[in-house]
Length: 338
Image 1 (cartoon, one colour):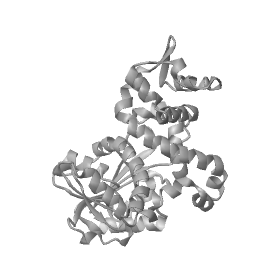
Image 2 (image 1 turned 30 degrees about the vertical axis):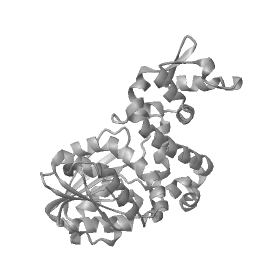
Image 3 (image 1 turned 180 degrees about the vertical axis):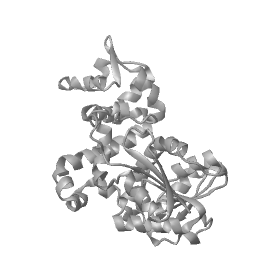
């Protein structure tokens, strides 16, 4: 497998730890902005100590800059993605830095004592859903960090997921844990569907703000709540033509995953669909690029496609599966209620 999402060209510059950290520093110090603005910057004006002369070399080896005579300029490849993928790079690098520390300090626990790893890993402090149960400023600030990261991932995954679905115009879709509505907006745009996102209060508040300027035909509705309560058939819009879980079910123990699928099937209209889009277990094919280490902390929770197929079949659904090319193990399972 070649690990490269065709919709995430920034990943080409996150292949190695050293290159990614040099990129993060170049962004934080404003060096890349300066080079982009001026076209080229003399090396002797980069304001580096003599003993840090290796830093531009790291940027060159990562394909970010090139030396032209005595100046540094952005490579054509990096200049082509810098303006519109800058935010994606910032959010990914922020998360990769946290994951790198967690893996360096806790790989033994990740493999041998998962509860201990989760207790001490900064990653799981970032993804502390308990901080998202209200909408005060502190809750919104804490929630924004992981919502931004998930939204960036979803932006690159949504085109391939949408291409694998078949929904009727006007379909009523409930997205469980739909974050700030990136996937929901993509479904609305592609199919003319009506999408409702059920998520935690802080997430819904951020989603409403993010989508406030969207046209009504691409602006999901948001309902605050805990999906585990399972009263989805009482929400406005029910019964649903589709209930979607995008990168959500792996968060929960098996008993909770099965209960959520029970709730989904129960809330469907006849002939409705349960849609599960999830990462799968890592595969032993090819070297692992640095950008994909962000998934290692969640690797113990990813289930094979067969798990979801069997679970939905056991609930009386006809199951169809596909595997979009997202540069990593990823599967889509659609169970149709009979």
